[in-house]
Image (tube, rainbow, N blue to C red):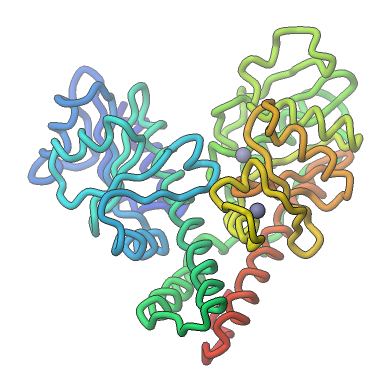
Length: 407
Ligand SMILES: [Zn+2]
Ligand SMILES: [Zn+2]
């Protein structure tokens, strides 16, 4: 348990989610283990274990920019945050906000949700089997609140334009402050760094495994996915090699399934929930190296639907309009194989060869023999979306005096 606690505290730091010394992770494994002495607030946290059937509890102040983003979001929200991205929809549902750190308030909020916010203090998450679950929920909360803040800000400015009203001064101050923070954060540190990915085509199975693990690690390192939510595959002969569902993109060793393309075996039960979409992309485009991540500004721009008659909370499954961000198609589609599933929308749109953004969800890219092209496409799409985002913000609020402050 101690080892796991240290591992996930370290990951919080590495991924820019929280400083190790601002996080406390408690684990129950026969006895209670924690990285901090259990006194004061931390003693109160340990009492949550008496109220819930859990084996780990994480309480941490998020790193910037997440800290300021969350503080800004909860300023006007008394009870809960309701982001409408795919991770929230399928995983977090919503994020309760409470005022005080007490075992009772934490247990009550977490009895029906994976994550909660204590106002101006931090995020609390838990695991029932392993501290890894607490880490995943924490990471997803940072992602969802980031996306919510930036899409809400853009839509607010759009609204100001439509109604010809001046944006609120407090809003502008917060926005400028948060933008300064993201420039200095780890989020974009690796954005232009050089990477060396294995060149294809792979000669044997071993090389395929190495390509998948190596690319997965780079996608996480470049902040193009919060580690547990992407997937990756490669086709050789009549088989597809695909990351398992719930596996961490930066730790894919031993977490790759081999599944016959013709569906002739039951292998693949543990394969990524997007197996069908990957197979569909291969059959429609012939591209063998397929990559899926959740880069933040791509998700944000995908939700920038201004069409009349559209309910943005429903566009993820049924947006009535074809859209694109500088030529990169945006499609709707739910996870899985249902009638509104992205399995039906992504593969045909991939034929344009530019990758595809799924509304409120993430990006699919593909290449022929290795992951160099899909990785670069993913990174470029995120860059395009980030630039388009700030271009639009500046257009909407042209009284910003110094547009160069934006990323
Ligand atoms: Zn996804
Ligand atoms: Zn729409």
